[in-house]
Image (tube, rainbow, N blue to C red; front, side, top):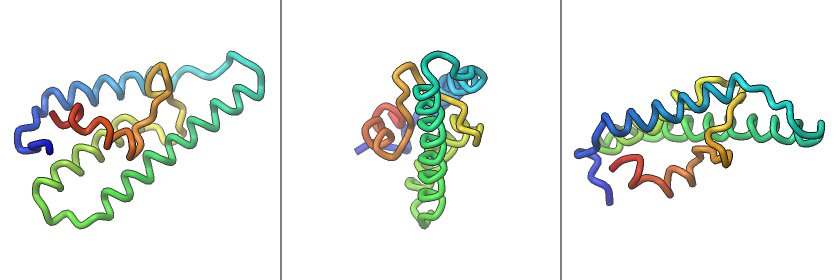
Length: 115
């Protein structure tokens, strides 16, 4: 179990900043390579990732925020999503292998995000 009281905010912010920068850079890059079918598929993936991000933010914000430690954790995840997925048009890929920050990703990387 992670000790969220000892989360290094500077490290967390640096990780968020890096991912947001990647998202912004890729957001400005239109998908032009490949067949029309490949381009359409890539655009669809971008939209799906934006929807996933929005859903996770809504789920977290809808939860009761009565546990101070959970509230801090939720706030970090929400801020992470909002900063990384700032463009609702979904014109982004997060990293080279196109991983998105959905709920499963957060679960798998909690120790890394909140260490």
